Image (cartoon, rainbow, N blue to C red; front, side, top):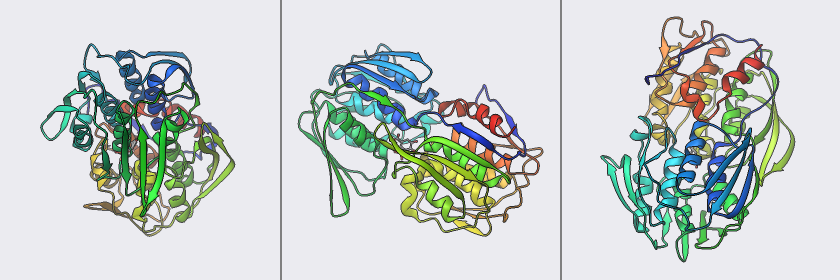
Length: 442
Ligand code: S3P
């Protein structure tokens, strides 16, 4: 638990009803700031997520010379420095809890003549950075990392950097994006090969900013080629709602009897929307209304009504398209009829917490039947009966926002409620989560 932990008890809930809009997509918000800062001229953003993670990226871009200004709620303006124009920051770059800030900023800095240290909180300091240190070192950057290739670390950028061809050894959009961002200020063509497709916001947005980027497919692998040192054009960006934030409300409305909730403006990019398909396979009633495009991304309003769920074997190939949604899927599985089996989820062990171990322990604390395996959880559901909850025990969230929100959802569908040890990390990705939850369960 951290020093300023904020415990909270999530009580059994009334049905979730009404209409909400979740905040802007976290991945797209980070990228809007990073690319806006590299364009020449003024980028205007609406719907930016103002969570701590994204604010860490904004502060970093400011520290490196971009003029970043908040105009109003979610409305931001950036005057970029142009490709190659980032300046030496005066102090360490603090990425807080944010793996995305850490990896993407490392990529961007790696091809500038900048020497800086990068630091983060206790959770981020446990996470592996070798996955970005390896390709960025091949491009010429130098790193002095803490033991195990972790934060805090020193980074000396390469100028000029060397273009590489890099086949991703892990399915990670952060690693892909780090290499592509480094490629922006690298002469020649930087190539990333993706054997397993991951979220493609970087590719969509780089194109939107006018980068020279080709995406092809060879022998079932995605090949992304970026020509470096081409100017980026400023943009007017609209950030769609975050499907990873909508996920908590989708599952809550599915689990709590009598619920009928509409979540407006949810990003439905196929590289992100895996949870919707998996929940439907389990029997969920999720209707897509008014499917449209916002800011180059597919978006829809989702109407979610309570429905009984049945356990399934989740196809491991969908994992990258719902990688952040497994904690809340585990909660859904804990109330389904029968057994849900998940596999191929080793990556969950290196998120803000070890999400397999943390969720197994949290669900057991509140009376669910769970088996933890090396690469997934097997969960035996209650068949719709509320979970027992935790009258006198706290569940531990290990500085992980998505564990806190998942266990909040579990509390709504429990008999005794669930006491979460620390809700403060929720502010990293979903600052108005509690307010929205209060509003729809009243
Ligand atoms: C993200 C990629 C994913 C995801 C994270 C955001 C991104 O991480 O878990 O929340 O914005 O690129 P990995 O690349 O480690 O899978």
